[in-house]
Figure 1 (cartoon, rainbow, N blue to C red):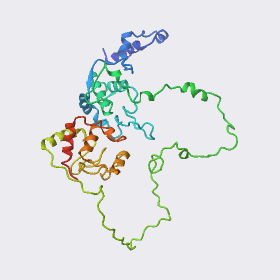
Figure 2: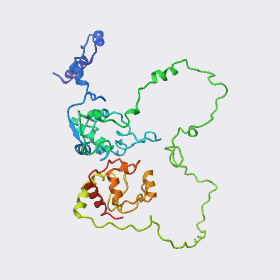
Figure 3: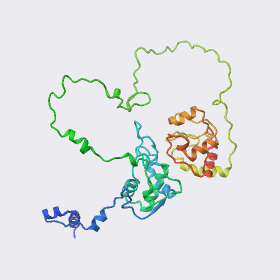
Figure 4: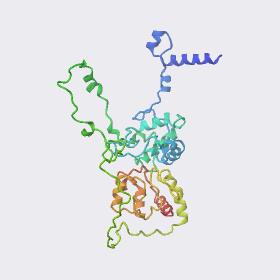
Length: 370
């Protein structure tokens, strides 16, 4: 049998399975689909758990699978890479001019996460993730958003117990009843507004155009024009020597910070392994550059927010201005629960829950000076 005939018969069979009674009666083709045929196509997972397959997965396994199949686009910690979407963080940002819509901050149902991953991911290799792997990835995403602990296991049995933070943020679309009727009347084509229309205010005056921190409309380019009244200072102008300031004692922020004692080599080696969880965003060593997070050279025992060229979040900048020093106690608290230690932090990592992991990472970081 020729390939073209095979394709023709396959197309006819597909049509016959999917054709409803009305089509069959009108065209004399096909038949009504059988319940088991419909069930084979009905693979959606609903918020009440309907459609969930048997299986389970834990956070640790999910981290491994995510690193293998998802991190190339979404980052090691679901922080997003390049133009690929961020999946973690954004807590409390939905009312901001530029909200961060993630699994934790925006998605209302966990079933949507599971269903989308299971049927559509990874990009270019959809439906290659098993049910157990999908449970594990979903558990890891919950953990990355600070919604479960690191020993959490997700399964069909406890799936519906998870309530997403934005579950109440959606409501039924009532526009057909409340808005559409306003636009279904005879349109006015002439003399619709008495008098001569005039512009009274602009969008930026009505506060409907978001602004960047410098006051410019969001996304606009800075005004690089130099006012005519501003004249360059002559190169040959004489420098005015400022009077010498009286010597003063250094402030607390300027006072030298005691260098940490040499760390245990075994602890440093363990910290190097744990730091792999941080390496996607933070760099160390000679020639390291800022990335998603700042370079961490010389962080232990030194003032916070001091890396040149990195734009810190407002919460960190405020704490740095208040005298925050990354000593052992501060690093322990931050690494255990970043969001709890610093509300509003940009770091999406959920934290290191084991004290030995935190101690090891701090020991490893202490080996990198400025």
